[in-house]
Length: 135
Picture 1 (cartoon, rainbow, N blue to C red):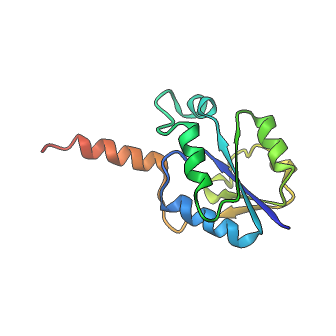
Picture 2 (picture 1 turned 90 degrees about the vertical axis):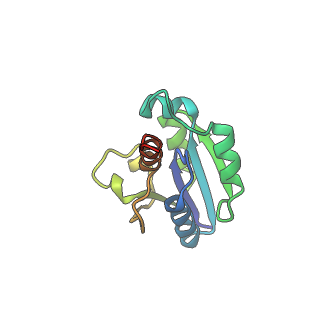
Picture 3 (picture 1 turned 180 degrees about the vertical axis):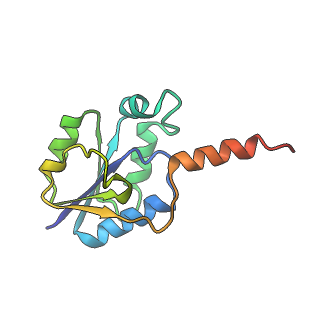
């Protein structure tokens, strides 16, 4: 059995996330999604994130068709332990030239080129900008 890993915040689910999950499931037999804990997201993105708490994000992810398992991780070590259990790790291509936690532990690392350019940050910024328009 080929076990595939994707990881991230998956804060506000959008079509880019769905495309990634569907593609990841096609590559292997078992899709494991590792979700950053709320505390880890706050440290990386600020106190106003995540929008959805880890319980909600995990529940949503567990109920998506391509996903076989969801785990939370709060540290680099916890993520590396998860990586060591998998055969293929898929990361967005925007990470190609950035430091990748646990890269040296990946049996195979693939970069996913997004079909669209959606991101949670862009979604939030667009929402805020629309709310500030005069009515």
